[in-house]
Length: 432
Image 1 (cartoon, rainbow, N blue to C red):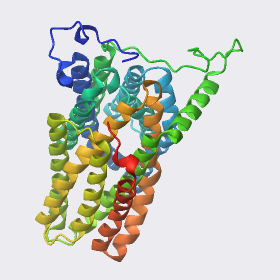
Image 2 (cartoon, helix red, strand yellow; image 1 turned 30 degrees about the vertical axis):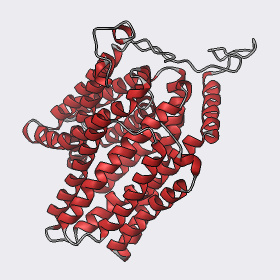
Image 3 (tube, one colour; image 1 turned 90 degrees about the horizontal axis):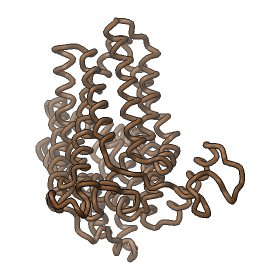
Image 4 (cartoon, rainbow, N blue to C red; image 1 turned 90 degrees about the vertical axis):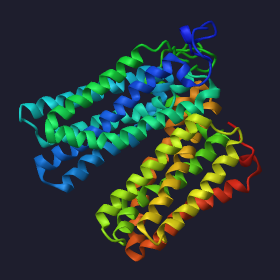
């Protein structure tokens, strides 16, 4: 591929097996580093939330801190995609790991000295939000540079497996660290995971595929004119990325799917599941069972996709999955028992991991030119940022009226988009 140098695992690297992403040393390093950093993230989440509540005693202030993380992430996402394409996914992702490590270390030092102040929580939220605005498009763009296109589905599945494993084990590990050692030590652990992830990226033999200006120049120079300012170049890059996304039928289909999924899922899990659990006996225990069932389904889905890969008929796969997920939403609200609801969530989690977590990114990576991949990933992520609060607010209103029918309404976006794409011959014919 353009912009890729694989060293010992390239065509002449006969020492390694050529089947599957783990045959590539570069992927093994990235997978190990990113899985470790996600484990540190999920474990530190417990420690950070506890530290904020312990220091301030205010859930309202905790919510405000989380908002300070979400705002810069959404505002700067397009810029993160443009910088990723102009520099390189590896350099951007490595810089994000180092920045987040530094921010967490600063909080750990303040905590160890017992000089934590409220403004530091907000500062950490802003820094993490900015880092995520750059790391999300970079993380979605690095796999095509280290594995062949035929292995992208399995590579994404293994990345998803690492994330689901971190989501299952990380909070428990964070609770143990806080209980036995303290929040400071949990912060040190998280910072260490970021540093290790940055180190694995530093060793990658990957070159960037530079964004080319009009006329083929790699700098910001056009026909001998004066050098444009850095922000002017990035503004043009963002505009080009948006124009590409607007022209691409594949990107438009993915945006429809992600918008529908966000409208359905965000409110359902933030508001709907707790409300549904309250309708069963032992509501708090039931909620834990339901969330664990969802996590189990996602873990199984990631493993399945990692082992089997994806069918070539991506359009039929994603349309079928979308319709099945919508039907599962509606059924979930009317499950007669908590165990019945848990069974539905296992199946639903399996389908989501197989389709949204593996099939969507693999499709984008395989169909998007490398020089546009960072910007397309940033565009694809935007509906999640914009529609998440809308979904949560709508679900809050619907649940207040009727919990079970609220789940039926959550199914509507998924069913509508599934039917819309199912009636589109070109969408059905899409291939990865």
